Image: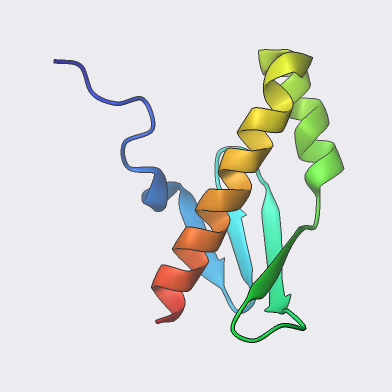
Length: 83
């Protein structure tokens, strides 16, 4: 049985204040309360730069999927560490 390639993903994130930063890619996601109830809005501060770097390394076809995963991870880890 092989190890899952994304095992240990939480350790790649640093949470500070209202931001989560992904070490390997450099993606910074800033969180703010959403207009509705208990939701949060996350915004990729440097998403365009990270998308260009990911496209160069992995190909344009993978960028949307990778950014979606990173944004989901950012929200998960930010919520976990803020509780």
